[in-house]
Structure formats: C-alpha cells, structure tokens
Image 1 (cartoon, rainbow, N blue to C red):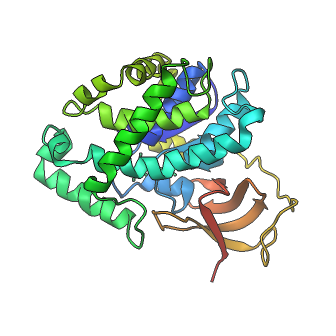
Image 2: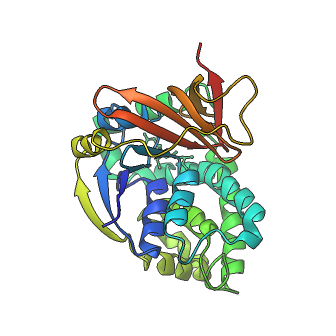
Length: 311
Ligand SMILES: N[C@@H](CCC(=O)N[C@@H](CS)C(=O)NCC(=O)O)C(=O)O
C-alpha cells in the first residue's frame, strides 16, 4: 500500500484520468469519496479553499489539479514514465489544450439534452437543481466552462476523427506505450461515451473505441476506501515534508514566507491562503495551518494558477 490518498468521486472525469494512471502503474492506494457539490468540509480542511476534484494527499502534503497530481505520481513511481523527456514541451502543450479546451467541449457534449434524459442525477429534479446551482457558483466570474452545444459538436467530432486516424496507426497516442496525453484524452472520451445515449456514436470511430478498451483494461489499481475524517487525521498526524526554498524563480514582490492567495485562472475562483514555501517555474507550495488538519503544505501546478500577495 502506498501513502497516496485520492480525494475523488466516481463520476468525475479528472478523477478517472488519475485512477487510470494509478491502474497503469499498478499501484495500491486509498480513496476518499468526496461530495459532488459543495459543501466539502473534510476536503476544505486539507486544501483551505481549492474545491475542484480530484485532490491527492500524501500525509500533510496536499496536491491540487491533475496537471500536478499526475507528475507527482510519475515522479514517485517512475517505471513506465508517462512523461518522455524527448516530448516534454509538445506533451505539456497538448495536455493543457486537452484538459482545458477539449474538456470544455466534452462538458457541452456530455450534458446535451438527449444525454441528460437517461441520467440518474438529472432525473431527480431537486438533485439536478442543486447540481446546476453548484456548478454556476463554480464558474462564477468565468467563461471558461461554457460553450454552446452547436459550436462544441463539430469541434468534438473533428478531434474524435483525428484521434481515430492516429490510433489506427499505433496502440496509444504515445506510440507503443501510453504517455500522459493518453490519460488526458481518455477522461474526456470516457465522460462522453460512458453515457448510454452517446455510446452508439463511438461506433464510427473503431480505432478510438479499441484504444478506450485498452486504457480501461489498465484498471484503477488496488483501492482501499477511507472516509474524509480519517484522511484529515492522517494529515494532522503527519509533518510537512516540503522545505521552504527560494528557488531560481520567485514571482516579483513575493518571497518565501509571504502570505499569498493561490487561485485557478480558469474557473473555481476560490483562493487558498497560506505562507509561500516555494514558487518554482513548475510548482507553487504554500503552508497553511488548519484547526482540524494541523500544518499542511498545499501544492499547485504553476500552469493554470495565479499567486497574489494576500490583502
Ligand atoms: N484543472 C483541474 C480541473 C478539475 C475539474 O474541473 N474537476 C471537476 C470534476 S471532474 C470539478 O472540479 N468539478 C466541480 C467539483 O467537483 O466540485 C484538474 O486538472 O484537476
């Protein structure tokens, strides 16, 4: 059993990205099933504000956003790395596009009226209304999560055609082995084609369908489920492992020890406040003290986040 604890929920596409990577790496880990909508009190005790799904915990180290979570898993378990150095920049760009733009397109496609008709969540009117209100709050002040279905559908079809063409030449987007782009792309496809009303549309993309079976075949690894309170207690009983470091890049005006707010730049504008431990070109880490979780170090990827001195 590794020390990894994944805070996630079953229907979450970004959680599926990480679960599949953990399956590929054949790891055993713990999971906490977090609520699909706010409030998420145990998660907040750990992140201090960041509310998106999933979050990875290792003791008192809390990792936000799958862009960082997948790198951390790969760094700790480097066998069959999904970050081949010879493609580092190209993959970084492609994965960012996939996890932002393609994900937005997939949300529109997956939430189209014919897909919602058969959904358990949307057949319960009160649950559907609570979900819609929560997601409106999540995207407040942002246009990054919404795109009209009419605009989204041709984009989706175009990319599915390209994927099908590429995957007719190789088993994975990474060639004969998967790389991180396989996992990013998979969670968007999974989100759309796991819906019974949309599944038949996959038939027009046979190589893509075979690739989806290949990724699904990795499984999710070996999972032991714990509850949020247990996870918070693990954080409280652990020490922060990240040492403060004035690295080669610290944002102007900011230095180690500065009180900062860290927040996504796309949606989910709920800041996490803490004391800067590290701000490298790749990662931002802040220390915060929580009354339940004690001292925790909260990590964010640089890409997709902003750091501002607390007012
Ligand atoms: N850039 C983030 C995106 C995460 C994201 O948008 N996750 C969705 C669920 S798949 C979410 O947070 N939805 C709102 C929620 O779960 O409260 C990442 O890569 O982790």
